[in-house]
Image (cartoon, rainbow over all chains, first blue to last red; front, side):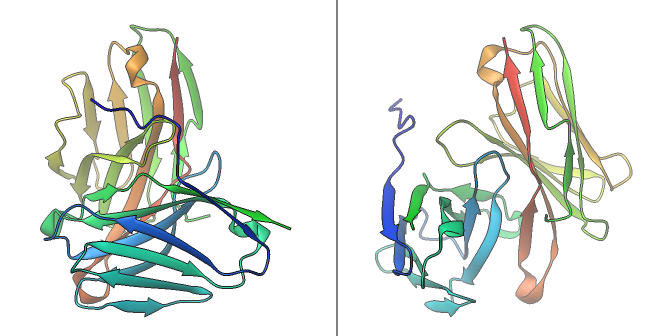
Length: 113
Length: 116
């Protein structure tokens, strides 16, 4: 099959700018979506989630937007800081009550001081 | 720190050897998930437990893989006759039913397996 290899989408921003990371999900029946942050050598860290009956949810410095019409999810990070540098994954629950997650490809965010 | 621990953090083994990994979830969490992550990819679901019952296994989980959660607390993942293609990060996630019936998953630091 096609190999996506190590070529992650990347986003480079200046410290203090807002960041927007996008994700296209695969299953129109998915009912729950999560954004995870993963730093090198660590496990994914939960950032924010959203259920399919919502189109926007806000946390501390982060906002998730869900557009079910086009199966698109985005993560907005306000006032991006160097500590936000990491790979960001979106994940979807398309498995009903078992909540086995399907992860997207990931986006590498680099914040320049 | 999510409160989920995994041991060992790194394992280097020769092809053909058996390896076993352990995950200790958050104590009150009744669900435990195993995922595998290769370099540059997102985690892929392998299997999950609710209490001690293994409820689903991915087709990624060949016969060489077995997982247990004997007392509904810690879990082990064993790989027999390891192959180079098994080299990956093995992640454990701990979960319980939260608001609106959602099972939020909190990941451990992972076990990095290298098969030489």
